[in-house]
Length: 200
Image 1 (tube, helix red, strand yellow):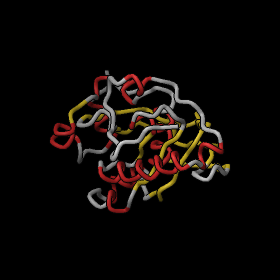
Image 2 (cartoon, one colour):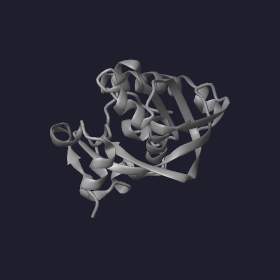
Image 3 (tube, helix red, strand yellow):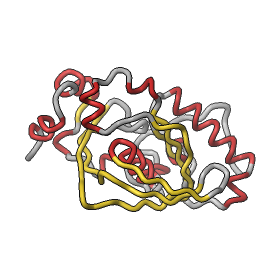
C-alpha cells in the first residue's frame, strides 16, 4: 500500500503534497500494518522535531491522518501567565483520522503559530477559540473531541494540513517574523501588545 523509509522526513513548504486535499482512510486501512507503522513513525518524528502536531501530508502521505501531543515538558519554559493567556495545558498523544471540524464562530482569538514544514518562523493567526471534531481514532473507532484554547488551535492547524492549507494562508501578514526576532522582541510581551504592534 505504502512505501516507508527507515525514518520519515518532514517535507517543507513548496512541496506539492502540502497543498493537496488528503484522502480519507477506510477502517480496514486504518487497522492495516502499514498505517499502524505510519502512526508509530509519525509519533517518533514528532517527538524528535519536537512539535505538538504532525499531519500525514507533512511526511509525504496525502492521507486524512494527524497526530497530536503537547507534552508537559514543552510547557516548562513558559510562564504561568503565558500558559494562562493561551489556555495551554498538556495534551496526551492521540490520533485523528478523517476529522470533520466544526468551529464555534462566537469567539476568535489570535496567537502566534509556527509549523514544522516552515521552520524558523512565526506569525499571528486568528482561530476559533473552541471547536468540535468528529473523527476516528487509531483503531478506527468514532471519537468526538471538544476543545478550547491552545488545544483547539492545534486541532485547527492539523486539520488545515489535511485540506492543503498552511498557517501562512490565514496569518496576519505584517506579523510574520523569524523565530530569532520573536524571541528577541516579542516573546515576553502580552499578546495584546503584539497584536497592537502589527495592526495595519
